[in-house]
Length: 198
Ligand SMILES: NC(=O)c1ccc[n+]([C@@H]2O[C@H](COP(=O)([O-])OP(=O)(O)OC[C@H]3O[C@@H](n4cnc5c(N)ncnc54)[C@H](OP(=O)(O)O)[C@@H]3O)[C@@H](O)[C@H]2O)c1
Image (cartoon, rainbow, N blue to C red; front, side, top):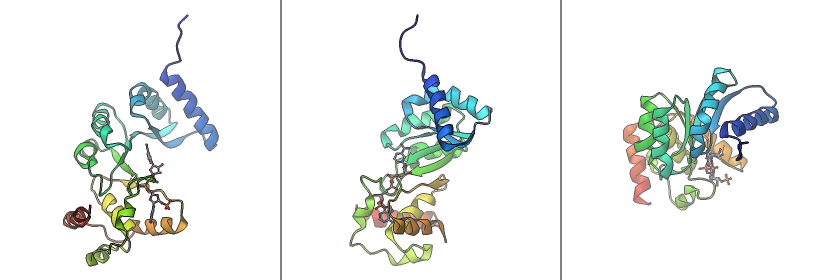
């Protein structure tokens, strides 16, 4: 007569099945554990679902720099395919913690909150500032493109998922996916411009 709640993998299985039903599919491309403390209990189930062809890839997400060390540890320990992690020109911590492990273990990196997040967008800090003239050399015509090209040009980064509630922002942001990307020396110049006004 054991009391207490069912183990996490039972919740995980039910949650996954509910998602499949809502998405009207029987398989997905990517399944994330969205809560770092849930990773250990859920990893066996996630691996089973991958082996059964229910998901192509599995991964872990965070949006907090204080969880990066723990995330890097989990990346070393478990055979995961993706991480989703916070990174921006104003929040470069992941370069030291998460990215080296991603490169070493060939784990894809999706950057969330590349503009600082919907509650603390760093675009507010660019108001009244003009872009440096050399931004045009990398096809950058706005600050959002400057910030997004910085993020996606890091060699460890696979892609980013900026959020927006406005169509004109969506169009502007999509353009950051076109044209040349900054190289390492251009990235340093971008950092210098940002840091001088931080
Ligand atoms: N895994 C996790 O734990 C986690 C946590 C947080 C977020 N995420 C994911 O990460 C993604 C991005 O998150 P987010 O939207 O909070 O952060 P974000 O992309 O860094 O920032 C969005 C903010 O930037 C503004 N913005 C976007 N494009 C703009 C432009 N061209 N010009 C001016 N302002 C612009 C948006 O305002 P407007 O609406 O006015 O465009 C919004 O306030 C989402 O898919 C979210 O689900 C994941």
